[in-house]
Image 1 (cartoon, rainbow, N blue to C red):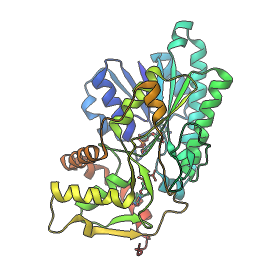
Image 2: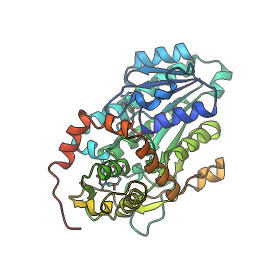
Image 3: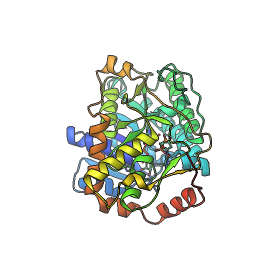
Image 4: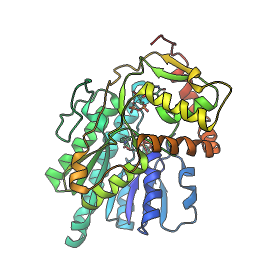
Length: 356
Ligand code: NAD
Ligand code: TYD
């Protein structure tokens, strides 16, 4: 079996669902259930004996050591993190705790467990670290996309904490021989994404008749990847990635934020028409401090070495995402309560509308 951390979040829950749809290998799913963790994401696995959910913190070394001893997983797939840049600007402490201290704690528990394994089990064991392209910093308009050898230059508390976690993972390979492999992925979108990130927030606000907040001039560029493609890439990296290596994972889909918002409005105009175009709800608001201008991934290494390529185009992935959201309005309504409302008030309440 495998141990997944953060499997109640957006990408982790998609990974667990995809894993159990394509294999019978059981999953232990360890998640703290922060605001971003949602057991409804795997409600379809309620009676599935292959899925064991454990409510707990990756920083709890004793708990993790006990799980490793009890279940003897052949791999750890590490998603658990604080993941939202805007929240890291308002309050970085949780990012340092979970992303850095939590990864350190998990690495130490993994190392102690690894040392108890037989040679055969050691040869199979993997620690797959799930990371981001944001560790590389920001590109200029004509710069080549990030490769695996691009120097780290993180700019936000979030990306700095992920960069630190990547470096710890690297050091545990070089110093202790822990068999690690890392994926650095671009921006994900798709089903089950918490509506604080751009794409699900725009869809939810559009349908609720609320403003669609575009930061600054809306010309910042992100390289979008459908979440199912990221999960498929991680399965390839876990199966055949070379130990100690990092793999950049991206969709070759560079888009300016305003173009993403326009695409969503046009899809909603087609699939859930209102009295006027959803584009009328777009509002330019004050920019994010230190906002990275452009991310782009060169994904040739994973294609060359592991034969992975995204299956979805931006058009097919965005259509699937809007259709999923329209069909799952109960899920959206349920997560938009309590803590979510406080966050929206804090982040957007004082933001001023600006002319782009
Ligand atoms: P998410 O915020 O949706 O989910 C994070 C999950 O981790 C939640 O279920 C949360 O409860 C859990 N968690 C947080 N702190 C924990 C702790 N201390 N112990 C146990 N569980 C804890 O995040 P996501 O978007 O699914 O991202 C998952 C991973 O992928 C993160 O490591 C992130 O850095 C990385 N990543 C995300 C993107 C993206 O576009 N979302 C892109 C590249 C990489
Ligand atoms: P986000 O989804 O938060 O991902 P990240 O910051 O990790 O790339 O934001 C994606 C882009 O969209 C980023 O350039 C910030 C911008 N953005 C907005 O313009 N408005 C919003 O309300 C949000 C949440 C993001």
